[in-house]
Amino acid sequence: MEYVVAAMSIVNDLQYADGRRVKQVTGGGLFMLGGVLSLRPQVGFVTVAGPDFEDYHGGFFAKNGLDTAGVHRTLPHTHYTTVYYAADGSWREESIYGPDYERDNAENTMIHGAWVAALCGRDTKAVYTESGAEELFWRPEELGAIRAAAPKALLMWEVPHYNTFDPAQKPLIWPALRQVDLFSVNLREARELFGAASRAEAIRAIQATGKPCFLRLGVEGSCVVLPGQKAVMVPSTGLARTVDPTGCGNCSTAAAMVGFAEGMPPALIAASANVAADYNALQLGPCPELTDPLRRQMAAEARALAARAVELEA
Image (cartoon, rainbow, N blue to C red; front, side):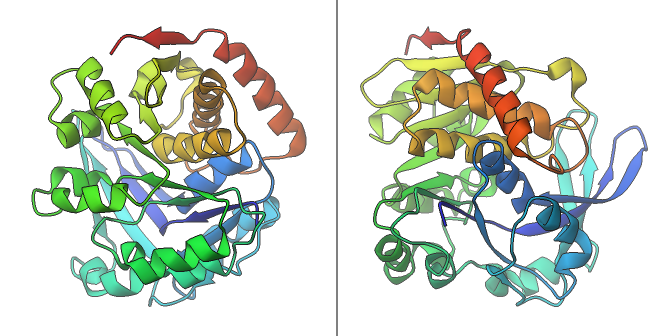
């Protein structure tokens, strides 16, 4: 498989601060799949789920020609939460199966390296993971299986928000970070992770890791940070037509991974990621169907957007 995404499968009910409520919105790993599919049609998906996986995700897989070989049904139910949004933009979520469901099933939710390796080969260009730094994914034998199966692949890590802001888990990030080829954080996470007071300071700290990074800047856009080079920022696009921004960070990170793996210049990597996020935000849940004509359209929009890139002083 050319690209592989390893992520959680999840369904959400959304409870907004103004009282609006929307039910059964698919998310989680589908946002990452959408990011890859915005650029390339071939992607495998490794996840854990319940026997009800197809009830929620089957339509997306059918429309996009994906198979479920990497879906491991180790849970009683596919993860399903209610997300409560506050007026200040913050949020919290709770499982509809009770407050203990995710805790009690935490071990069975973890991705095994052998599962990812089973979808990989010598033609695999990149693997995306959102596994927390505390998970078994980072054990040498787990990661070693992936590296052996996909010796040419880049490993992209979207550093989990909860790792960054949990004092007990934050130290675990560094050993995991040393094992990946590139990573992604948003600006708030970067400032917390590196103790940075400003965007420029955060960029300098990212460059010091020696790892390429896709730095997400929210409504401002995104930034590709490479060691020894000036960071390249590209503005957001499509904000006026946004319906729901949920999952844009996941989607744009996965698209950026493809850009890195395909050898795109930094401006085009960021622009492709921003365009993918734009289409992700056009509806609740991921962009439902990504076809070759749509990919060509998105590629043209990304090329035009890349012309607006600026270099940032760090």
